[in-house]
Image 1: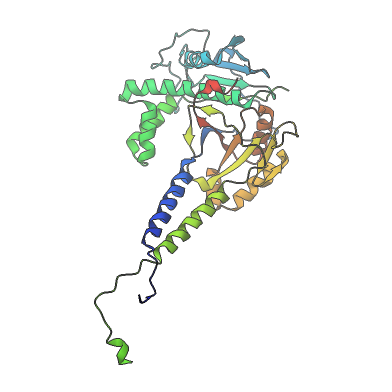
Image 2: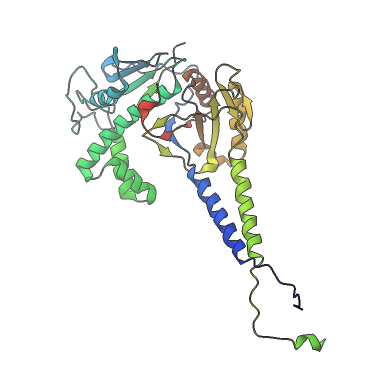
Length: 207
Length: 156
């Protein structure tokens, strides 16, 4: 007669199963990374704030979106595909003298590759992009436009980065996020940001 | 007493029987916390627009999320806003941000970001209303939540 010892169930593989599940959950949780287009809203203005300085019409790049998601750029109908190029040409035009920087007098843009047309923007730091949409515009269209305009700045910064440091701006930013506190990288990124500052203004949507 | 002590027989194997328990505990913790983080959506899961110029949001704890989308059964026309677990109105955004701020210390407040997770078919008007509320209370950092992809597919 076999003597029944209190035989323990072999639970050795249980840990493996549990680990497998644990790793699965760990991986799937981190997969959903929140990403998006970051923007900073303008600060609220007090009611008796002084009038904002008038900008020259040629320094404003007007983008209108209507409720049928059509695009009107500088008074002309345009496809979303062409928006980025149009914005690049406007920002990079460099037809005049820029805003004074760090107390120094305004300089003409010496790094711009634009047409230098007197009809378009003076300097990247004067070029303002103004977006006006309708309340009925699709959010998807609005984000697309924001993205294309943001991309225009990235393209310009990339190009200048390649020229000055042999590295694109996006590459520098990625590198900086990996080793924060690198002064050299930070200075380069800041310089490129300053060369093509992102000035996008959003007007109240039409009703 | 001494009878028992003499029964020593080599080294007994370390029992790993409690290991699964520990791992299971961890597993359950992760399972539960994952579900809790993904707030129950009372609206249709927003179809996020896609974009190329995306930036990852850092410091997840400093991000407060506002959902905008259609109602689940499609009975209510227009966009609904969801804060935490409730459907809310635009006017509630203010108190929502204040309560989010209360969870953090004073120094962290300027770094808090509001992520807007809106359906690509919702209207800009709703988003503008939210943005003007945020502007009023100085919650200036926002992020339009998007997925990575082709921008030309956002509009059909």
